[in-house]
Length: 299
Image 1 (tube, rainbow, N blue to C red):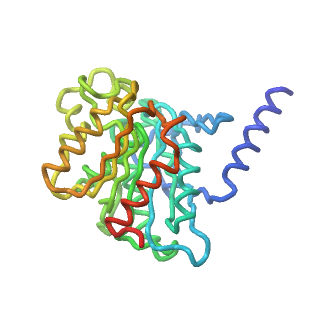
Image 2: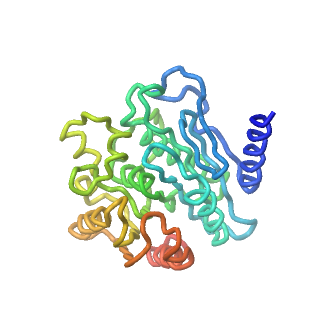
Image 3: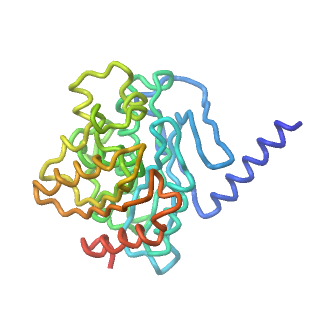
């Protein structure tokens, strides 16, 4: 009885949090690179999910008459072990819609040898599929396909940065050859590198396993993958982040600067990992909105 009540309570909490959205499957048919396994997804009362093997997009559209054509895919963080869906997903999406920007929260597959044939590519496949789907349905959602970006927090920032540096190789079925390049990236206290010196060890292990080769680690250390086609990027990080060192954002910014790619880097003395107390949301998000206007994504 108690367990039944608890599960009903969790379902009610999630339903309440998702009133402003439509959640749709990311794939209409077979999920690529997936093993046939039961859906073992776990949803907690704090809107953190784990064991994700059925990816989805939650659609948040601006009010009628307010859409400006811009759109962003939001990748919650969680070390590739869980997804922080509300604070690093739904809440951000709602803030964007108030500014006329369509937002899509990506519940991407979490790397697992139990559910994937190759866990190292699963999250990136989902990010690429989200970009492809939104561009294909751009008219339906009143989106300019040339104003579609990707945003990520922590390990979600690693996924977003991977999408922005690995888009030339399609890991999904893409018969129409839709562009998989995001037009901009927003990276919030992101994991960028998976190397020993500044990488986040749990993120590396969850994505690549415990015996990853140096070549594979470099492939997914995105500061080493920046080239002249990498999209404009907004970065923010705290100097006192003890989970993901600020060196991650510094290295990515320096790589962008070397190639003359437009980028903003906003650092805070305090904020830790997660910006749970400081800086205020209005502070860092306001700077993000200002940057989107500067690069002419929003009016």
